[in-house]
Amino acid sequence: MSIKRNSKKTAQKKDPKPRSQWIGIGIVATLTLMLCLTINYRAFSQFGKEAAENEMLEQRIQAVTGNNLSLQEQIHYLKNDPDTVAREVRKFGLRRSNEKVSVQTNK
Image 1 (cartoon, helix red, strand yellow):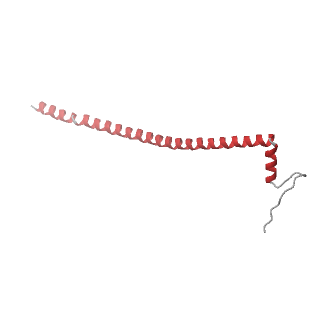
Image 2 (tube, rainbow, N blue to C red):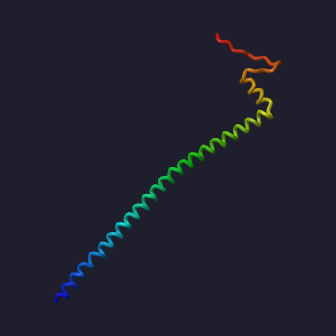
Image 3 (tube, rainbow, N blue to C red):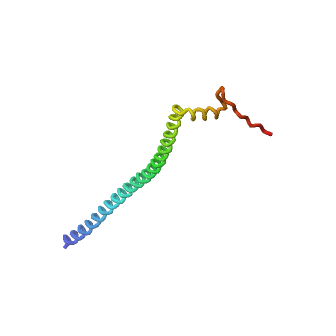
């Protein structure tokens, strides 16, 4: 009869081991999941910031490209159109030798 009692004690001692193994596996799985979620959240938030910055830079590129085209057009007219050159020269107060300039007086 003493043998049967020992076998019952041995059987009772084996039951807690599978539970403790599952608890350990559960803790490791939970920590791994939390680590993966943290890394993915950080990457997602960084992606959002970079997407917003990319959009801003695209808008700046479009603005600068438009300004560049306008300046190229102005250069073309200054090189090829004498009326444009004369208009720009008058902005600086210059005149041709045969041209009369009216001056406004403050009265």
